[in-house]
Image 1 (cartoon, rainbow over the protein chains, first blue to last red):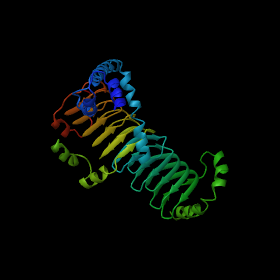
Image 2 (image 1 turned 60 degrees about the vertical axis):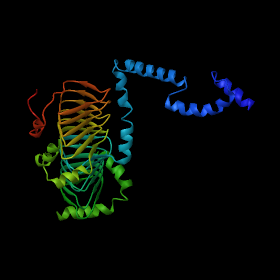
Image 3 (image 1 turned 180 degrees about the vertical axis):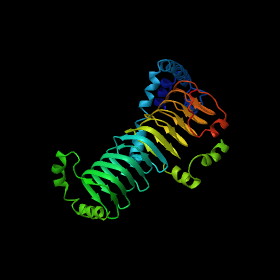
Image 4 (image 1 turned 180 degrees about the horizontal axis):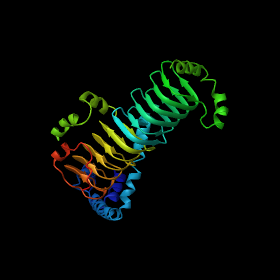
Length: 215
Length: 140
């Protein structure tokens, strides 16, 4: 008890009696939350209030300070969106103009204009009028124009009107292609790159030629 | 606002069914996407990239980091990124991270503390937006 008393006395300067102290700590704990007792929290709140009033004064007038805020939010949003999905141009969206993307993009809507991307997936209901540039283009929809891509995959549902410049192509049977296939994208490069990669697409070009020949 | 929302499907192209389907997957333009031209969407559009041109949408969100240079016609616009142009929307909310330069034509607008708005925010009655199918060509 004596040890407890000494500790309590040292801790709380104002309290003198030993017995009430044992009951006081419980009261103080509850009192701190209520804010009724405990002289210490009050100056803290006063300091905090003063700090709160002071900080905005510094932050507000030089507006660059809030401008720093947008730097924080963008990082979570790409993280969320990047985890969930890449860029999506949905069915309801119609774009008249040029589109450029440095990331993968899914197109389900309508685009009148050129598309420049890295990985471009053109969905079944999509319509593109213009040239589609990219490293890898998957076509399941409609293009009226041209494709220039290193790797082209033309699905069975695709409807392609125009030339396809590629290094590597896969065409599923059922695809409609009205145009020329040119394996000459970046003339010097394709021969070197197409031969090693040729193992996978060798099967598909056969169907590709048959399909194109049919049309 | 209710009348606005009810009339919207009639004004916008496409019947209710397509609109409902369109609203299910919102279009999203990531930070690496840049578009120059006109966008027209019968649904929601979220922009994290750069768009130069006019936008017509039901609901448009300019995400933080997103940038739009051009005019916007929508039913609802949420701005968290940068905008340089005009907004025509009955409901507009400008978030703290927003930077807006231009005019915001609105019926109800909210601007969060910290937002940077340089321009006017003229009020218009709901009826003004109901008749607004296209972007007004005359600069006010």
